[in-house]
Image (tube, rainbow, N blue to C red; front, side, top):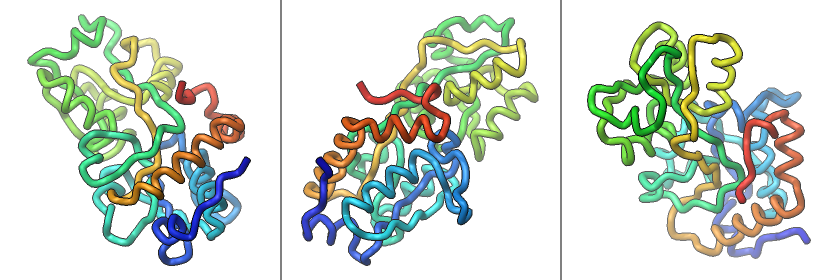
Length: 244
């Protein structure tokens, strides 16, 4: 049974008559291409459009280069919902829905290195290179306090710089690291993942009814298999996992 919004929820989530959905363009798994009009396409835009449909309003996608910039704009009347990963630091200004997909984050090391476990990396003198202000950057900052960090402007830059010999360890999304293993036998992925990135929908704090509605929509889409179908349609079903 489809979930639809009350007038109060519609006013909270689409005060201008359109659902403005902030999209993190750097997440290559959730924004995997462009539609026929050149707009962002993928699992994240699909979810935004599904929420807009339940609100019975048009959906406008607001692209952001990365999650940091997206999070900075909460409460500025630029976007109404933001498709962004759940993180305690962001939770100071953003209320998060339940997750709709999870993405493993792992370490990549050079094949001849002495790193064989996550514990080996959480030590002084180890330098980790990673995408600045990504969800896994925020998680590592809180949980791996012994290493030093080299933060760069994009996930692409982090991989390129690691290739060029910078830093001891690369932290990244596992599907991206698997591509590294397929391209070269010079690297190893450390398992298990050091964390799982929980992708969710965020809204400005203080709208519990709106958040409850979004959770109901996500629950419906998970229950009916609509999100699983979106993953398959965008060819990322083997790279992402659904919440258990």
